Amino acid sequence: MLEVTHETAGPAPSRTPRWTRESAWAIYGLPFNDLLFRAQSVHRQRFDPNRVQLSRLLNIKTGGCPEDCGYCSQSSHHATGLVASRLMDVEAVVAEARKAKQGGASRYCMGAAWRNPKPRDMDAIVAIIEGVKALGLETCMTLGMLDRDQADRLSGAGLDYYNHNVDTSERFYPSVITTRTYADRLETLEHVRQSGMKVCCGGILGMGESEEDRVDMLVTLADLPEPPESVPINRLIPIAGTPLANADPVEGLEFVRIVALARIMMPTSFVRLSAGRSAMSDEMQALCFLAGANSIFVGDTLLTAGNPEEAADRKLFRRLGLEAL
Ligand code: SAM
Ligand code: DTB
Ligand code: SF4
Image (cartoon, rainbow, N blue to C red; front, top):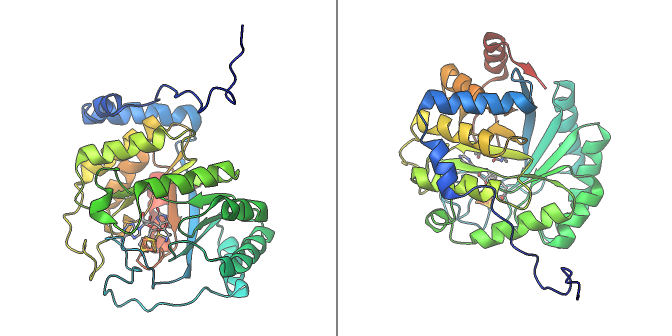
């Protein structure tokens, strides 16, 4: 009998999806206590429930971005008053990373307001990765779209994680961003995965999307060939001058439900309670940790917007008996 291999049979056979909209939606709609109990039970099978991973963030290239993301302070399409700057010098980035290391951070995340890195930027980016790695920190970058060669180069320089968010459902995406497609996003994620780096990919709640859009976004993430190792769930920080400046805030318990669903659908991933903690009460954050969030950004600035003061986070951790991972 003729043996059919993948090479001769064309594209790899499609696999059964791990999650469908229906299976995810059924869990999302459970009574709140059942949903949280289930999420916390899943969480405890793989993680210490009282440990939270801490990352620090630095914007290494601010503003002037050609993309039109409706939420972003750094898009040149919106008059947000942000002053654009060039890519920081390698030494300046490494000096900031050294301070972060001395302050106890284990992972250093660096963002650039680019559609994609240009060929002329790559040497500096590689030098930054090597410099930060040499301090003994884990590294993460978010620089926009990557082709396969760029992903290989970053991976070869030692970059551990690449952050590239799908942000919302495929259906809602064009209401938020028109200068690139959902398919572009998925293509970069594929390049990152193939290069051997870990994937950090999540989205934003509170941009006017429906609850179905949020669940669909999680189905997209959980059904990637390999789910992301890190899943940031951002709560929109409304930025004056952007089209989403006056978006209705996401309802608190709906936010917690999505955190819980992310935990259940991606049981081995770190779920990061990402942007928007400044607008959350301690009680709201506590519910998110109970729902399975186990990673946060520390430091009083994210990329351009505010984050809780470190003293406030230390107090929160003390009150909840949480420790840094
Ligand atoms: N330019 C790169 C890109 O978009 O891929 C990297 C930087 S971008 C600022 C990283 C992520 O931050 C976005 O994908 C979005 O999810 C999040 N983000 C940006 N502005 C935000 C805001 N105002 N509120 C919440 N999250 C935001
Ligand atoms: C992610 O999902 N959230 C972080 C990180 N990835 C790079 C960024 C949040 C940015 C919040 C808005 C700002 O600081 O401008
Ligand atoms: Fe540019 Fe990233 Fe902001 Fe979009 S989110 S405008 S790509 S910096």
